[in-house]
Image 1 (cartoon, rainbow, N blue to C red):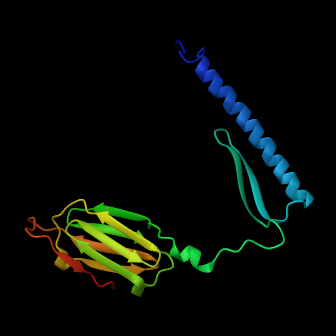
Image 2: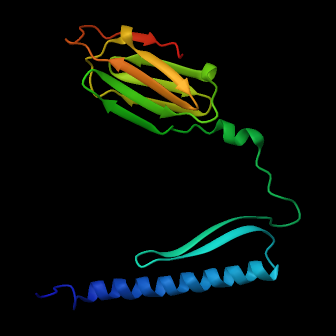
Image 3: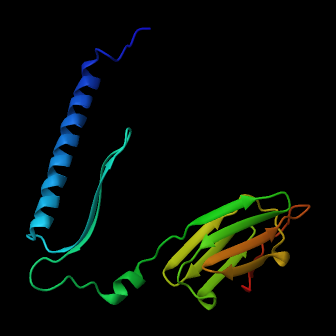
Length: 173
């Protein structure tokens, strides 16, 4: 069988670039480890090489200080950032189920609204609007529960489509 890419200069150039990049990265990471080991760079570090047949690289985690004062992050800076929670939506034969991770949130801080088309959730620094895959749902029978940081919304399907769009707040149990 003929390998059409074996003599292709473009792929050879990419391969050469990749090899040089990997050698440089490993050399830089070794120098970084030596600097940490010598005490020139203060801080807490965890550096581990990854050397598997198809994966090569480093995992580096650490905290360091530049200058005489430690870096101060305002306490409310992280609270103000709105994040989108991890969410799974499942369409089952008789219902639509939404699972949403809201770590560190009290049940009383969760605002949940559902229409025939959307599920809207707001809780502390989390916010997400999900478009439902079907409008044929029974809002009056919808339920929600919250346990261990996971919100579960179950919206039963209707046997026939609704004519007017409704909106309902759902009490979380």
